[in-house]
Image (tube, rainbow, N blue to C red):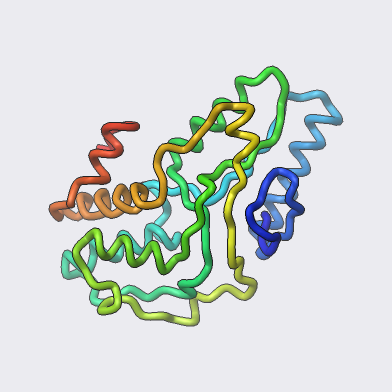
Length: 211
């Protein structure tokens, strides 16, 4: 939704969508505002930055990376083909964002909230962290394929979550490094590969057992 708008992005940041998907989300945002203010419904927008988990779709870059690592270790693939590694994203843990959405709905008055971690990391950083955690040298396995480059790239997203912190007393517990470990662990586990286990411990300690 924020697209090319300067970071950090808050509830006051103008939308500058860079894809048809983002445009559709901006439309949905204004429909919610219309029903809230025009018809008196309790309706609010959660503007969610990238929220990830082991259940993330396999075509999304984070899951593509961690699943690729598992396949490489299992001998099922030799290379991982990725697009632009430079874009920076604010990646958070999906269960925490659900908690945040629940808190939004418990308020006496509806309001809109940006949901993120307040940290931003590049795709390259995700690759480096994930491969290192799995004991691999990413440079031996990752190849850039320009077919995966976006026509209108979003370079830098970082959430300003000041409103959520102030009004809802919400702070994300799982940050970037922990998120990477969680996703790598569960993709290794899914293929029957012994995982380092730090991410699994984080889930069991802070949230839930993923199975």
